[in-house]
Image (cartoon, rainbow, N blue to C red; front, side):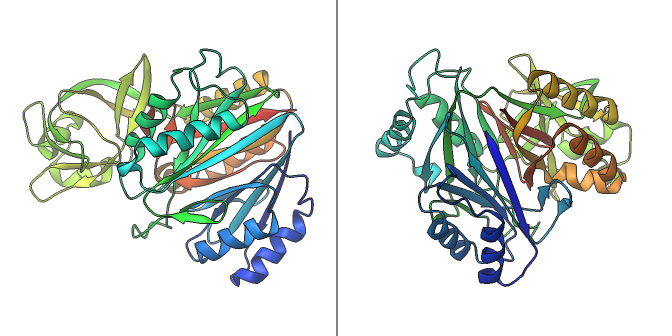
Length: 379
């Protein structure tokens, strides 16, 4: 696998595209073009122009709340493009225009995209040489529906779906995802990848349980609202568990998220805020009857070092690296002056990397928050 990466800060879209393409000249060689862009750019025009310049490539992308690239680090208001080439890797994409209205015809398009590159969705071994990268619109609450639909089609729990929710620079108005020049604001793009190269896909949590378990006694999964916790008003119960006043909860929600234990692993669910009646809004769906744990910051430097070291041991020579980093992590890194340490670690272990700050992260069957999802492919 070979990964070329380019960035532009040019605010004029035609000039920005020309600059990007001048840095990625091997149009006939790229199997995939993956782009991350600020909503400051006309996303439809950008998508169309990139497909015009790379007509033989699968071209996918999403809007962001910040971009990531080696050398420049965490940036904003840019376009970052990565181009992949490999004669031992095959890719095939599909766009789902409206996830909530997905039907039998949509199932066939996803199956066809997998079959196109030799992936048998019903095979118990299809995960051994393949995975799927996904970008989903971040404001239509469709992430959990997407993952459920995906695994209803790909009947293999070990097949990894990994990616993130598109952002819009924290405007919370409209996000975009694209496949081959077609754009949706209420859907998702899936890129199937079958490769003979070794790959490592994982998630990183920087939070650990503090030993306080709660039961969600009432919730609206459609609006992601928690109505009661342990039979109490969420605002009141959250403050009680943290032993703080109710006036202090807004300052605590970023550093004390919820954790859900699913199949023996911990997935973070972040608090979006509290309503006047004390109910709680979440960035992930949490169902009535679910048990969640209160989390706190772990040993960040140690956890991050262990993540990178473990990836390096599995993929000694990483040739392509895509990072999906939750925007809440990015905000937290800035608040705690951790950006330099994080980037130093990425630079030390990965010769090249790029990605974006997301509104949510998908890993396998689950949607989560405050998580890093890394996709690393070897030579």
